[in-house]
Amino acid sequence: MNPTAKLFLSLGSISGALAVMIGAFGAHGLKGKLTEEMLAIYKTGVEYHFYHTFALLAIGLVAMHYKSALLTASGWSMAAGILLFSGSLYGLSTTGVRTLGAITPIGGLLLIVGWVLLALAVIKAD
Image (cartoon, rainbow, N blue to C red; front, side, top):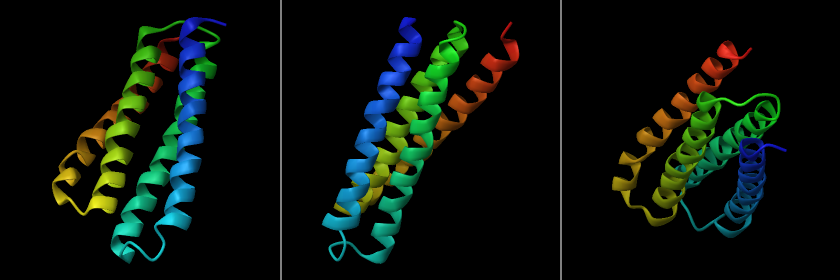
């Protein structure tokens, strides 16, 4: 297996395990401890974490068939986007520190860039 495919399949798998653990913690450990608003914010983080975990796995699968700098950039953008977008929502909801919300749009932009780079990589594929 080529290194790019191995990298993003591994990152996607680890991200998926973390999303399950973080989601379970929210459902069982935070219920009754957070306000409904903060729990909804936390759940949004988990939801986007899962969606983009599947994107990392897809990038790894596509990378098995061809090598592309755009594909690699897409994977790193998705990984950073998960960290910043979902991570900021996890932090905001559990600490109440509203300034963490300023990081969320940066993460969202990285997720969008990741999708666009993935599309470009596929369009340019031989």
